[in-house]
Amino acid sequence: MTPVPPDVRALLARHLPGREARSVVPVGQGLDNVAYEVDGELIVRCAKEPDPEATAAEVAVLAAVAPISPLPVPEVVFSDPAAGVIAYRRLPGRPLNRHPVADPRRLAGPLAAFLGALHAVPPGPLGELVPLDRYPLADLREEAAQAYEAVAAHVPSGHRRLVEDFLAADPPADPLAESPAGARLCHTDLGAEHLLADPVTGTLTGVLDWTDAALTDPAHDFARIHRDLGPEVYELTLARYDGRLDDAVTDRVRFLARCALLEDLAHGLGPGPRRYADAALAHLARTFTG
Image (tube, rainbow, N blue to C red; front, side, top):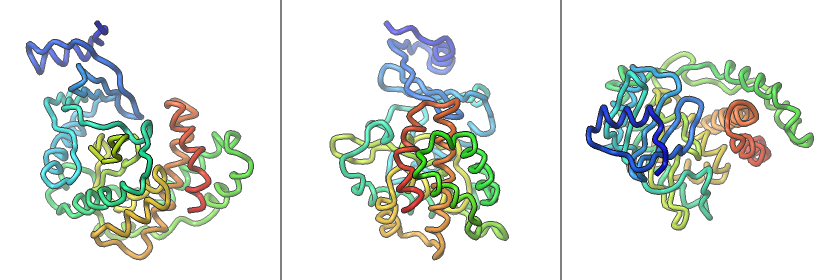
């Protein structure tokens, strides 16, 4: 029998009395959370630094999104905001970052439908659940420059000019700088690690980790698709998307994808799992040219 971590055992005893865990297996961790799988059917996600308000808001967002999302989202079994914990039924499929599908272009249609539904949610009632994210693009570029400075030696010499030219250029115009009118409900961290798919059929089966959901520029959601699935999948997704976007959205998507890649590179070469750095290096050329 797999030893049960004390925190997970205590959580199960508190919220699901009589529920005995036969096995508890760590299934991954990111910047903010560690997740455990219980008996192959329940995921218990624990925040590294609990934020009760954020956890309660995420539970409310999941409840709001579930009825309108064409892709499954976590069904909460119990939450413990004080401990920063959300437990939900395990969704089928595997994360795309570890189990890529044979033809990622098939993901474009489902992703477009998902983003169209998500971005169409009226922002008004969500104002108390998620923050308004108007973080300046110039500040994101500065953070990306700092990340690159720390890891530049690991970037192949033939690719450094691509990154350095990007960091030397002005960021694109920010549509939320003067008014939040264009902000929409966004996942904001729609990377491959948070997209589940059947590795055999290539069918998307779920969208995980809504910790960073916010009212912001929809370009943030498209940016992770560009970074992790490639410019072609991004273009196909955009072509099938039925929401309203301005003509300059691709400039912002490319900008945000490149900043996010440098963030992942620094994370994977620093405190995070090495696979983040490996993926960033593998996708660097296409992200900074596509």
